Image (cartoon, rainbow, N blue to C red; front, side, top):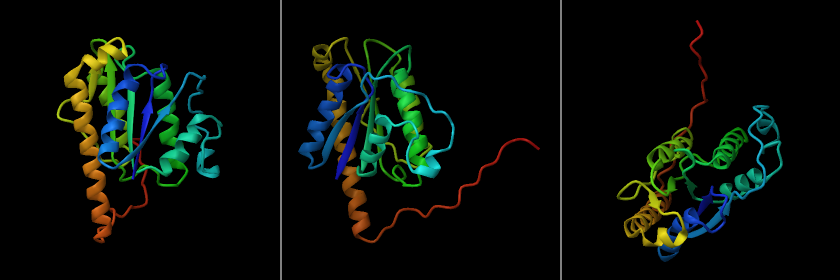
Length: 210
């Protein structure tokens, strides 16, 4: 089993990475593989709402979003980490996830449904809970169970060294990782016992125009 960890920070090994690294280490101790996926600093184009992903099975804009979709198709869980920028997730993380979730869903590959998800926020001071709410919405619209820690999944500090001093924050990353590992093992045991995922219905779209 494998969990994909997404670093939505422009800093490859900054504060958000430090939190994700603690999660990855704990997942490994629990026998779960992981990979930290860097969104990076290359310019990202926002979703064009062209609908091409439903025809070609990927985003028509050929960048790291499609690489993520391929990796997510082979992963069993997802954790999205982002620093707080203006009391929300980074613009890059938001643009990336908007396209990754839309194209991943429209591709028809079923890469998100029933896979557990979790979000992590990193901040110097404030804005973390709103960022977590924002990121969790990608899961709740995609039939993904949300995994929690024992507190809100956040770390504080201006540098990786300061994050390492956030003893409670890093402890919660370990709680989160162990909860994720436990859920994945329970899901695997259920499948082996013949408990199948919920059956999908044909999706119905309505609006409020009468």
